[in-house]
Length: 163
Image (cartoon, rainbow, N blue to C red; front, side, top):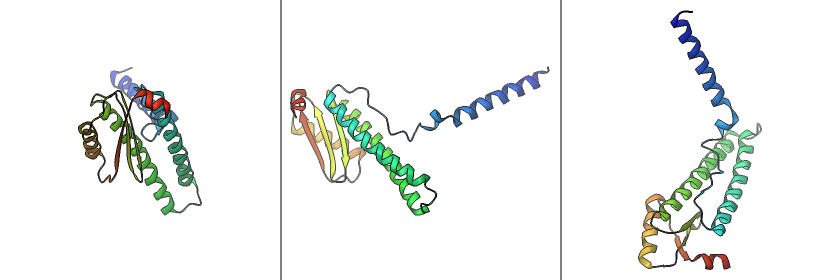
């Protein structure tokens, strides 16, 4: 066998493996997978709140996927479902990013949840101050544009467990 033939065989093999990888179901779950879980969670109450929101949004994304897959659905409804699905995925990623940013300010744990009425932030700390709340609000405003209402709640681990 000549070197050119051997190179062509290896190139074909690599191409076939790449196609197989991208066609496999696990590779397709990647960017639209709403089951991203923040693993640096220290508080079980916040972890359960995250899980509840994740389940709620996953159910909504499943409903949207059903609309997109429905042959009888109109193009307008499929497009609207696709846009809403993308917005939900982006919102989940943005909330996780903001939680990390708030924790990088020196807090034990944080929970960020965006709703139609505004953004709720729960911060686990033993010390609370107006300037700390302002710092958190500034971090949120840098990422979320046009958010009208941002509520920052400082809680200790004990307060959160009692709630």
